[in-house]
Image 1 (cartoon, rainbow, N blue to C red):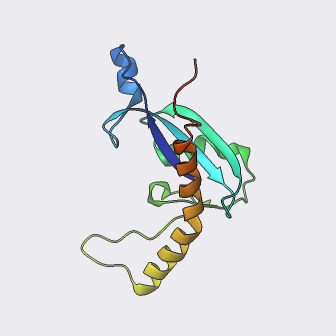
Image 2 (image 1 turned 45 degrees about the vertical axis):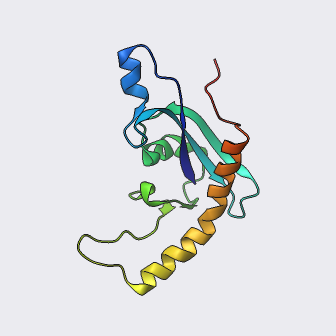
Length: 133
């Protein structure tokens, strides 16, 4: 599971500008969430066109009802805080992570790369490149 942002034209209305502004990308965006099977061949669920300022974990919590409560997901560091999502270890402040944690992070990222590749394909072919009227 991962999220991606797509740039949009800046809205004229100031209130809409605030809604669509993403501080992460420093532009006005829409957020898309992709849930992909582990092998990366099929997209299970896509949530397209949410406000740019929506967090990745917030978007997941909105769409969680579509799946079984026992279902587990693999996410990135933006998804820390949800029990259903396996996330990599973060480096503690003024410290380092252990070699075992580094190895776990590497294995997790090698399983997650298929999601990143699927998002890349969606962006290249502009499947979700703009908001439809």
